Each structure stands twice: as structure tokens, then as C-alpha cells.
Amino acid sequence: MTITHKLALIGFGTVGQGLAEILLAKGDELADRYGVRFQVVAVSDLLKGSLYDPAGLDLAALLDAARRTGKLHDYADPRPAREPQSGWDSLRTIRESNADTVVEISWTDVQTGQPAIDHVKAAFGSGKHAVLTNKGPVALAYRELDELAAAQGVLFRFEGTVMSGTPTIRLARSALAGCQISQMQGILNGTTNYILTQMEGGQSYADSLAEAQRLGYAEADPTADVEGWDAAGKAVILANVLMGGDLRVADVDRTGISGLSLADVEAARAAGERWKLIARVWQEDNVARASVRPTRLPLSHPLAGVSGAVNACTYTTDLLGDVTLIGPGAGRTETGYAVLGDLLEIVREA
Ligand code: HSE
Image (cartoon, helix red, strand yellow):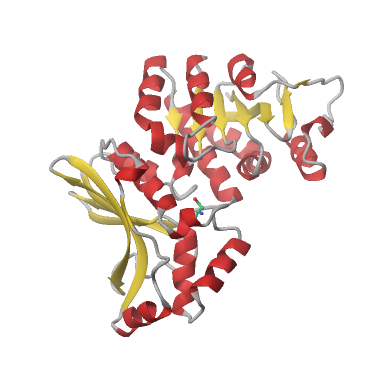
């Protein structure tokens, strides 16, 4: 038997389109393997417009409209006599659509976490599960949102906030559930790791940053990357979600990489070491703490060999010692996959 799990996508940018492409390509395979078919019933995007069809929208037509004009009113449903509702705003879509899960992937203000926090609250208030990929709302309001979801008997998942689809949170919560994790050390920002790798090849800091921007790794304001704010937000999520912390980004002892020169990189190389921007989360007197700082690692360290825009995370555990996970930390398909992993978990656990 195959069940249908209905989705409302709040936002239809890179991540939403990445998810739609995955569902289009793998819909039959997911139905065969897991007995579930994910059906997008609604899309609401501030710039592109909105559509709602309680019986499901056509994914290829949605992607086609996004590609052709970027406007959902150009959506042409190939099936006869289908007239999706248009013009619903995000909150109406969340509250009144027949979705089982709201996928919150809109543009979010990282200072306030809005409007994503209100979107997630509205989803819980109307009995819907929520998945999101923007770190702001989780870094700012994890505890409140988690308690609200539990009170409403719905699920809240956000794997894509740290290392995109590389299952950092899921590894700790599920596969390492029987272990105590005493520390996490990670390379959680691809832009800075890319810059440091390029500098090892002799390229200047400024040229390496410009290249990271051109390749699309960097945040809109790259200060968030190079000064360690992005990594600090991710460290806060891991501290609060995995170690019972109650940290804010301002609580993270944070230094970025903008003070590192080619001479510093060369000095480390001559000593058989490498600079990495290391995010660290640990317990001290039963209180979670976090830091982000450039660190010289010996080449034998598992994180020293992680080059380019790749991310990695080492959990130190009581029963297994160190467990290291290496994988992509950003990207259209990679973050779309983070949402898919969360959706499959919701279907299994709900
Ligand atoms: N700017 C981020 C990075 C993107 O470089 O890792 C993913 O959060």
C-alpha cells in the first residue's frame, strides 16, 4: 500500500526547486521502497506567487514555470480541468491547505528568524509537521519551537541547517543515540574552508574569497562566513539540539579567518600543520559551550585532510571514541535532499 503525504512549500527558490527535482526523479522509487508518495499541494513564494491544488500540483509544470519566467501564474497544468487556487499568502497556505507537512524554505532574516519562526508556529498551530533548512529560526528559537511541536503532537525537523543533506544531526540523534557525545568539532562553513585551501596553494585571501563568491558558496554578505557567524549559528544548533544547551550566537567565543595571512598559512605548512576554521561544542560542568576559531591541526587529524568547500564533523563519544562524518555543506540537490531525509523520518515516526 502506498500512502500520500502532502506538502506545502513556503518558498520556491533553490532548495524548493532542488526538492521538486528530486521528487520528480525519485517519486516512483520512493513509493516502491518506502510506500509513500510525496505530493506538493501548495507553493507560496513572496516573489513568484502562489498556487494551491488540494489534489496535488504537477512538479514538472511548477519547475517549468520557475525556469521560464519565475512566476507561478505561468504554471500550465498538463492535466485537463485543473484550476489551482492562486494568490494565497504564506500564512493562509500554511493554515488552510490540506498539507500534512509544511516545508519552510523562504528567505529568512537571520537576526530575527522571521518570517520563518511565525510560519513554523502557524504550521504547528494547525496540526502540521514542519521541516526547515534555514539556520536562523533554529539557532534563535529551537527550544520554544520544539516544545510547541511536542505540545501539538507534531514533528519538527531541520537537518539541512547544518552541513546541508549530510546527516549531521540525524547521525547524532539516531545512529549515536546510545552514546554520550562529549564534544563535537567541525568544519561547518564551506566558504572559509575553500579560502584556506586556496591560500595553501599560494592564492591571496582576497582572490580566494572572490572565487568562493563567484562559485556561490558564500553568503550574500560574506562577512557571515569569514568572521565565523555562519559557523557559530550552526554550532549553536548542535549545542542546543544535541547537548541540551541554551546558547545564543552571541554566546559563542568566535574568531573568523580574516586575520590569517599567507605567511600564517605557510608557517603552518612548514610545521606539518594546516589552518582550519574549527567550530567546537562541548560540555563544561554540565553546561554546553561553543567556540569558532582558526586552529592549526596536525596533518594526522581527521579534519586536516578535508579540503575545498567540503564540511566535516567529528563527534567524540564514550562508546565509539571519535566518529567523523564528511560531506557537502551546501547546494541545490544537497539541501533538497536534507528536506527529503526529514520527510522520510516524519513519515516513519508520525
Ligand atoms: N555560506 C555557507 C557556507 C553556505 O559557506 O558553508 C551553507 O550554509
